[in-house]
Image 1 (cartoon, one colour):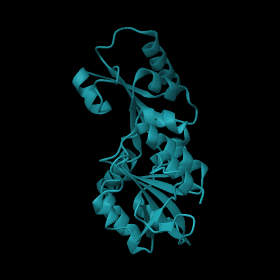
Image 2 (cartoon, rainbow, N blue to C red):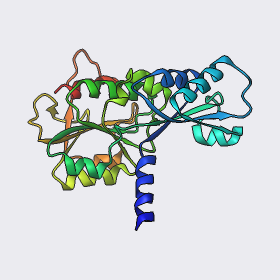
Image 3 (cartoon, one colour):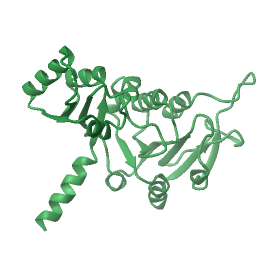
Length: 251
């Protein structure tokens, strides 16, 4: 029984780990007081450099574990061999929320769902708008959408560490869970008849933001309860997905 509980605790802890890479990003994260680093990963092939020495010094002062790896192992950790520059950092994301816990602990909410947004800067700006507005959490799929990386963190201007984020391993199944408990899913469509301003939103509202080019995926569209539109003037066809997010965040 104890081993089973230890496994559950370890799995829950791993679910809150975010790995970033790149010397500038890692250096900035180690200097940021609001970030909780847990482990610094370095390539054993790194040449001597002041930036590396400074990272190690900070880790020693803060009692952060430092691990050395061969290039191949480090690339598996960073998931970006071309841009990791021999450095990766595990960060504890206390704002990563389990979807079942969120559903159990929240009666009313407004959520943003990311469905295929591929540009990391767009994702970062979406997170920033959500944090500033009336959004209670963001659902981000683990696959098919920009990963949460250094560019996302920079574009979010640090708000990524303040915004509750639900990482979904299966977006369709996650949304079905919310729907089963009374949530209403809204998707944006150019063919929709009702303006986003004219809707009486439910106490459990979920807004889905789709890919920059293709929009919301067909699978998620099938789960949608209502399509809404942002009316455009002067022949403008659509808005950047991050701008759309900011409008929805302040409804």
